[in-house]
Length: 195
Image (cartoon, rainbow, N blue to C red):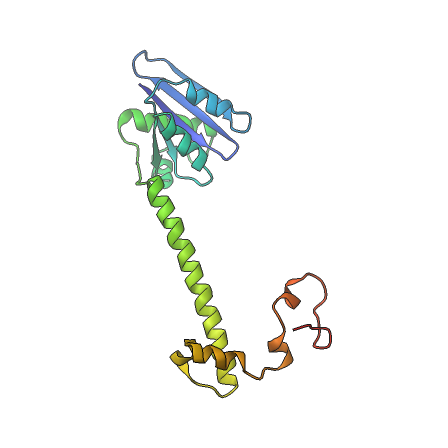
């Protein structure tokens, strides 16, 4: 089995490896854009165990490793850093440290969500944003109504309330359509507003 310590960066990665069957070791810098990293992992017999610090912008690599049948362990970056006696960071030494922790069974692995859990999180975040937008719009409409002396509260969100909102006598700045203010350039005044 191959153990790989990976110091991951968005455009490249420094790796150190150990083949546990033969004892062979090595290190290499792999570029991402050229496809060098993908070619390297594709030629490895699965399953290889890859360890790396928690970082962002690595989803493609996580998916690649899973597709190829390799195990990718994400480690707690602070605990990995704390296990090094040297304070100075160095890419090759960082990859060697991760490999050493994997080999010794001391790698501080953290839980990572599955693909399905990530999709569900994105859906929840999207729904949360939509609910916030709806709440903001309703609050603004309610304030427009209250400034006109209408205090229907929850009844404002019925068909009758919608009719009341549409018939509100509003000042020109409140009547102005949103598109008047969405274009770049100087602000339009009441005389040029088409709303």
